[in-house]
Image 1 (tube, rainbow, N blue to C red):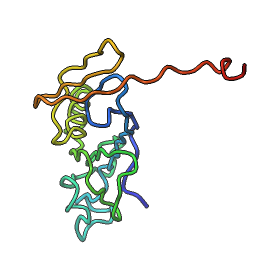
Image 2 (image 1 turned 30 degrees about the horizontal axis):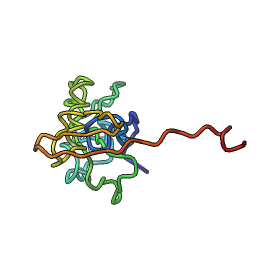
Image 3 (image 1 turned 135 degrees about the vertical axis):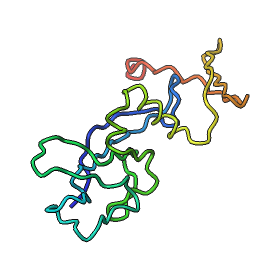
Length: 159
């Protein structure tokens, strides 16, 4: 049984920066409910929190609470490997209270920064007269993306 509940799935630019024709990756938010590992008696964790090595600290959880408070939210790319319950190399691991306090814009910025990793940041995209595109990065490097061929009209092939 998993300790995670999927909160949402969204697509983000694979390397954190959007440009015309960029690749996209599915990003998944996995919530860990507050009762998981809680020190509150009655939830089965009286002997200790088995998830303390890879999740933010467990939080007390009132027995009569109906709230969907999260202990943590783990942000991963679709297909991220797990060892038992631990995601290997997640993008972000946030305490539930921190996740709830973030605006969508702040969260997107943090996810894009995590996807970017140590790659330089995209600062400009130029469309050349031949239809190719040139990407310029914060370290001064550039990358040229060739123009994509025009789709052929299928009627031309049928004669």
